[in-house]
Length: 283
Length: 318
Image (cartoon, rainbow over all chains, first blue to last red; front, top):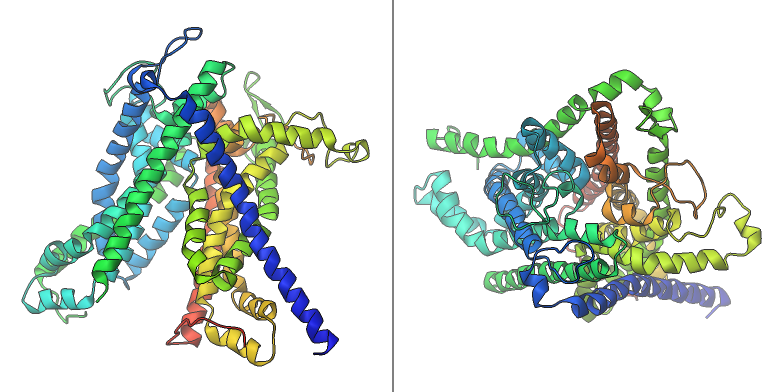
């Protein structure tokens, strides 16, 4: 082997090692974040955290019961809007993939996906909060719904396209209209996948804070009224994190722990559903 | 499926579902219109001087957005500088080098970084990263501390902490798109390189060169993410509106000022000035997004055109 070839081999080895190192470097913050969230968060969890509402400054104890319920209400409202609109939009894109309109909508969905969540928050503020001059859970739900929409659209489209064309052709050959074929054959075949996409989208918006700051705002009290401001886990964690009180910091970590657990559960369930779908589709 | 004459039912179905699809388009247009409408006061009063002004004084009714624009672009660029080598390294390792068995778990782990909410990054940033950054700032030798890049008191919070946290948050986005691009590079490219006696790294370089446009698009997509990132940055950047090149100086970003001051905006002009910042953020991220999507898209199209049937086989070193 000439020395030149050896040199090139060595360079190749070094570069390959650097790539492996890059993976390790990226894992450092991941491991650190999980370590701290578990260490600080799990230790601060107790029954009161799940059953109490926040206590005023100075009183120890209190919890995030209202914020947990608030987050559930907010993502529920978001899903109420984004799921039907997103799924039907996805159906349109997969049924008419080559039309100019579809291309524009697909592009718009990608653009919307890249719009900063805080900007979407301002939009929801102008749309829902300004006209009635009041922060409300509805406004927060609308903001989260707009953020959820593009994810649902693109995942629905992708999954509908995976449905074997034989199924569609079979339905059409039997004389089914297109709408009948879509709603009774194609969507049911892709349903587990579509649900997965919805779960992924829910996981993403459940962790959103910025668009809620001036839409659903915050609420120290128990509230399930969607026309009123409502607490959410993320905004509550933010409020506590930037406060100067140790007890509130502990609660912020506990809230972060719960948030990460919710999101992990949603994405693991989604992953398992995909795996099941893949197994089903295998011949 | 092109029927010469679609039935009435099909047409109804097409239009009916099309209305729902149009909602997505309307939202994007609506954001632009609404943000412009809600910032008219500020646009009319300050005009172009809004972007050049460096004073942000709500009490005096003086609004200049330059410090926020500077902070957003500077933190985004720094984050890009830090994250790009790592993101590309991950993409190369996962798609070209790693043992088959590790591929799935590694992909999942990097995706996990993207799943962690911004607020959790922020919390970790405030209580773990900022103290570490503060130590680094205290260790920095005085000679360096006198240069413009490192001047300022060692607060911990500031540009460096923001750039570090943004870099971590951006890595999964650019690395997953870059991985996708590398997967799309035809195997023939690598095989040809190996046939000419290339080493593994040289073959990877060929593949990277082929996917250059797409990879630039992937990096830009990450940049777009960094620009709009709000909570984590708000919590560690120090929130002080100033145009400074110093990594140690506390600064401010467009997204952060909106998050912090929106509910406090007492008069209408203040609110409109904040929304105008939001409008600019919207325009910048849309441009960055569109350019990066076009780059990625043109790369994918090229692959399809050149190799009509592209079986992506595993390229093995000779």
